[in-house]
Image (cartoon, rainbow, N blue to C red; front, side, top):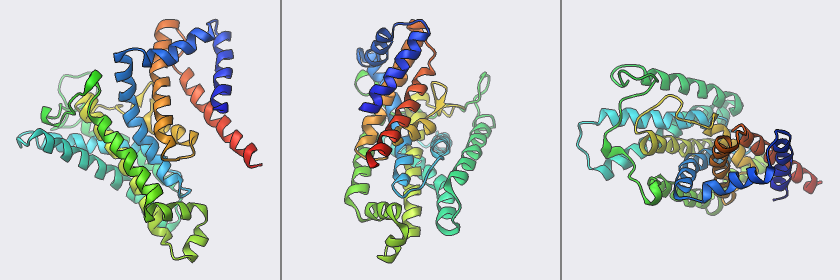
Length: 330
């Protein structure tokens, strides 16, 4: 909380230097996303992919692995969900079956996209920072290929995108216009909490992160823990990409992983770092960040303050949180 207050204090000074009233700006950032049905709906639409991208970083982080590939894993999930959806356009599957199938293939695509860096880290000691970053760029170009190539591409569009997936694969809306991806997000919160805090696998992942030598001495399969942490993280990002395609765009659109000019994968890293990757803290941090994203858009529209101010807030919060932890630990 101290880090958040200090970060907002610094931002308040910057906003004042830009010639705006900081109190009006903070009111806009916080209350516009929460003060209307539309604002809440947009906030939850940001929350779902941001939460899952944050889990993509948080789970391996507990094994002291740095998954910078949430961006690419999210792209892989969305791309495969769109391709499978288009391939089954004439299958006439019932909508619930179609939706579950596309969510599953998105999850598997993200997991498989993380599997290569995971195997390299576990068996060849390749730094996952490097390998996951490289996989991001492969995913970007594959998305571009799919979105601009027959038989998937949409004709007569000014942007790279595919044809829409069948309506049977769209996530139906709930109250306030929020799609049912929020239900998947709630399930993911429960699954990750159980995995990391109540299961043997979660204990082994955390033990590997705390001291891999001691973990190995006590019979923990460290290679397996490394593999599973990254694969589970990739699965979270993959299903997040599938939800974006199925619930928001209804097709694969180049750049669908962007929000406010930044990647969900990058924002997920910042979100996870705020709470040190704790399963209970990630949903809270993700919702807070989603409020900031919607509030920043409103701030730009109403006061002319650059939307990038929200990214400055996020970075400052992370820096002050890390600094506070260092001071606390002595």
